[in-house]
Amino acid sequence: MGSIVLLSSGLDSAVALKIALDAYGVDLALTFDYGQRAAEKEIESARKICERYGVKHVVISVPWLEDVTCTALVNRGETVPTPTEAELDEIKGKALETAHAVWVPNRNGAFINIAGSFADALNVDKIVCGFNAEEGATFPDNTPEFVEAINKSLYYSTGNHAKVVAPVIDLDKVAIIKKGKSIDAPLDLSWSCYFSQEKPCGRCESCMRRARAFKRAGFADPSLVVP
Image (cartoon, rainbow, N blue to C red; front, top):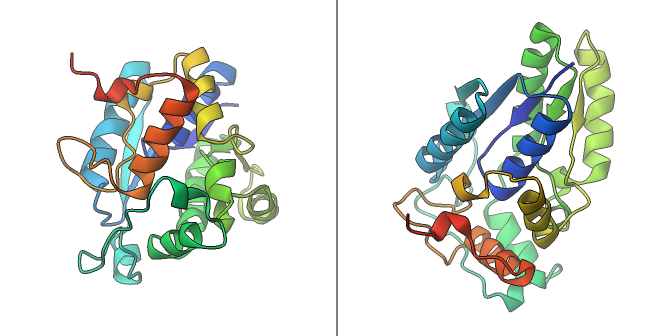
């Protein structure tokens, strides 16, 4: 059977989608709008990725998630963290602090369970997520332990025993970029910035991690190349 991909349009989910497409096909890509600052660009980028590969794309609005969270990704009254490159690796310090500022309560759990409904209805047995080792260091819902736990739940909550597959869960951003380049993943269409604007801000944590990763991987960021 094929797969359903949770596609935020970031590096990780874009590469995960291409891996899934090459390995077993993608029946559907889901992008979620929960009022996040980057929603417009994430949806636009995800749509372009899906159009490139002929993948069906569905945008799901979950406004209640915006209502129950004070995260800086949603709450315009909060300041989005702008750490230095050195602070990105302070797992017990600044990195943990910035992770807390952009934490969305049970986001991945909610999204996976919604995807589980689609998987069960469409008889698709794989839910593909872009969880990765770099974010797993500060976000517990990006870890192998989380995948193992939620798969136990999905076994009972879906009639076809759908399960989460996280093909880049053991990779950091540098390795994800290298993997993406090797399989011609849509890195040029991916969007990592926490904001929706014409160009990435270059200062938020997500932009910082992306820029550092491309530099260390030895590649220019194709999304910044002017045609």
